[in-house]
Length: 508
Image (cartoon, rainbow, N blue to C red; front, side, top):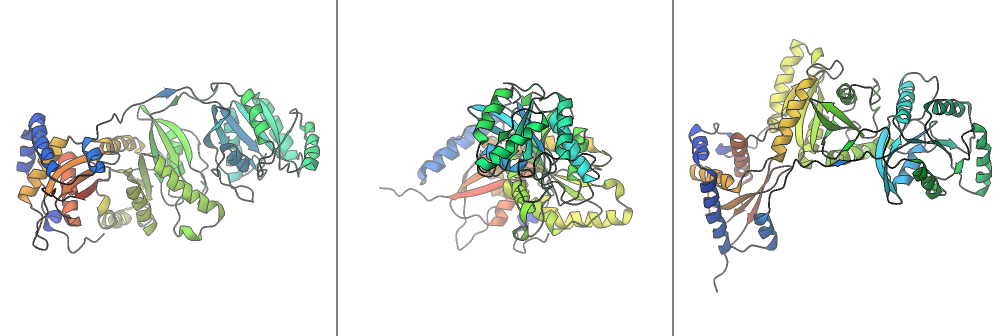
């Protein structure tokens, strides 16, 4: 990306000289803190508001605290395509979360959500429609539904009361009986008393009394949940122990760049539907994965498509939820297909990560398919288009074969360590003093703004606040950011530098 023509020479100048690094290293913590305290006292001569005081008094917190909790019981929802499973999930959750569209096949993966009823928390698993003898992607969907049942404590089997029991439903019943899991038969789309009478015909399936509900209108859902709570155990008998502290990794990228293959290879199982058809992932899918000797929560997201405002139906809502998944994540792995040029879409996804303030790792996928000609073009594209994220760790992988997948863990750990980092106030102000002495801010309009004091207001991402006597040029702030990276690393994380311009108190 082209640089601003008005950039200061300090921003594009030579790397930080060794003498400054040595001087900063020679200042011990006590001396640095003493200097910072003196500068902090000097701020008493300036007009400060309550927010300023809160920033200055902000204390450190432990970013690595991990809590443990019993695994929540798991309730899987299965049934033929388009019987209203996702609509029932939304009704249980009390919000539009699962993708709903009036055509079959919109939900393809098994997707987990946390829910609560009558003071009890549990996990709801939405699944793609189960079809016996399915071929192609439909076979993968059927497999996902069977896996969801295997990993559930109880099952809601949803049937469309308007259609009645079909041959496919009878196949599903046989599959469910073989699992020996508790099954509750749900007669969905029971919108009135007449439909409730028709629901009684579902006794023929041999699963006991059908529960007539209308997921669309909410009719009967409360009674159904009461029954489910009586059926579910207090603690899951099948789910792994749930760890509160695994770092959350969002896998982002254009459609069909290999995001789902990356998650599947990491998990060591066919966790997400993978198909040559672009856009087969619609919902963000959370999966706890052991990689590099530690547990991670991976979120595989629907591919972000350009021109979101023109998207229709399921793709539109899936794109919105991709952004929501990024907000919940701590680090994003942006997957790039090295066999294709870096596109505007790729850059927009990276910008989305930067705007969210999350840590960033770039995964160049399909590296095994890269030839020498394409490699030369790729190096040029990286230099030109990805210069603004040159600080992000890069890994060259093949998600399909698993090649160099082990390199992903050190990159994630490095990015998260930087994202968590807090710089002692004394050290930060010592750096500011060195920088402003060697490269003072240019005079603007006859005035030269000074930096009075600096503090790191937050981490995740590292956010610094400068108290100044005037507005600092954007180029000068970039200069400070660059020096922060050269001294303290910060590989894999964006850095935010904010200003608070303050005036001297008026003497009475």
